[in-house]
Amino acid sequence: MKLSEIVELLSAKVYTHPVDLDMNIEYGRASDLLSDVLRNPMENSVLLTGLVNVQVIRTAELMDIRAIVLVRDKEPLPEMIELANESNIALLSTEYMLYRSCGLLFGHGLLD
Image 1 (tube, rainbow, N blue to C red):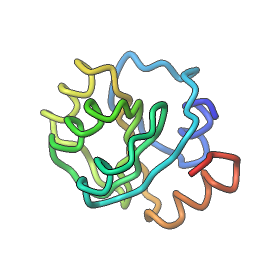
Image 2: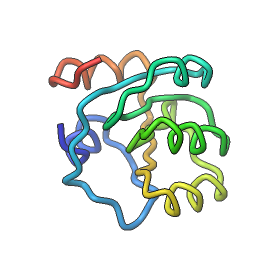
Image 3: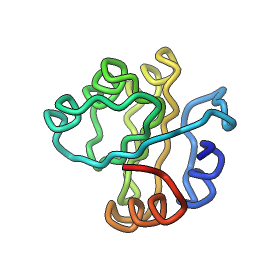
Image 4: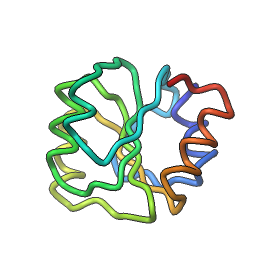
């Protein structure tokens, strides 16, 4: 699935620039526990989370996560945007709840 499709499906706002909307995302994962994210590496993935702190970006760097979607209409901290830009990680936000966001992406072919 292209990142542009994720942006469209979730009516997401993009915070990082420039961002490659043509990047291919193969897997999706959702968690508010970073320890769970660290247990199961998945390259080329998007992380959906309600956590708003720089540790989310650091975890994404470590696990080769290419995009992060903040759910429940949360906005990233300025430090998160800066670090995501430096790390070439797309940072997005959606008003949808975590459950709905996951369902939309899974229903359109994103693997878990």
